[in-house]
Image (cartoon, rainbow, N blue to C red; front, side):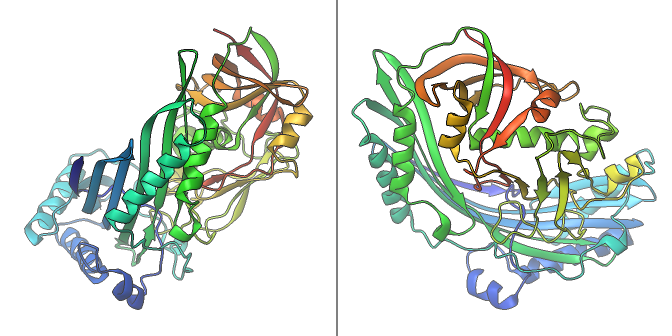
Length: 472
């Protein structure tokens, strides 16, 4: 068994939860390294030090995170890991020269040294006309409690028991499951305060918990692996450990006896967890950095037909307990629900203040990335989509990168199932699926009702009318 204690700069200060309610802070804040008030005082001290040092503008994010992760393999505890993290990120502007520095040390002298380092970098950096804080009139002034903070009072002993339960459920599915990669039960909490010299200061807490399990099956000397996981802001929204394990076992067993395919062209269905990648490729292509660098296969796509005419994509940043929910972005700009795609036509990009200025546009409140994205869908579940397709490929795993962001060319390794007469005929592996994302988006035949909401991209399974499938 390995026990790890991890400290340092936090990687978990992402979209978070409450509005800084002091009662909530007292009730749930016992385990954080510092209090909410301390984060606010550090942020104010950074702003003051930067202004005294000659900065014309400054912004800072002060964050902390705590977590526990337990992994069980073959019924034995393999790893217990803890993290207690703090970080200060400072960005200063001297005119239109920008400097950035960070530290995990909250001591006063370390704070001053970090600010001085950012100022020194700014003074030796070329002027950038697009550099600067978000426009003051776009900053959030009031924001809702999005119900994102739900601590999980889970002891190590209870986590071990849940890990064993998940693994045992997976192994019990079928005697052909011969090995396991283990089960992990993890809980995490984070908090941040963002402040800038335009008068904004705000932050909130968040939580993120998960249970996952992966096992290996064997048939005639050939092995297959698959997994399942559950993830949520609140432990009450997690699937039971035994359910996670059983689904991992079932997904592994159904892959046994996989074959290769001959090269052909056919319809392809991306199972919902894999379909989220297709949404991700679109987001990358219409995000500010890709657009102003001219590294996108969808330049100047605003107002143009990019998807099939019945496809809509909506950004919903205020979904309660949503993985991508946030009342304001990483610059303090207020977020709002909007249609990104309507009737297949692009209605908006994903821009922060910097990329918006580079493009001669306005921020969309997406500094730091997109928020919850909800793809429109029909009434057919996955089984109904398979019947509708009749003959083709169901993709349940993709391998490698294989996507050119400039041309949209798509070619990835894949595994899944061959479909005949609307039902699974046999599992397939070591195949390649290929096409171009422009053509694929326009050729979306249907989106299933089996929406996967574990992440920030909510989509059902996606059926593409025709793609090239190459065997080994």
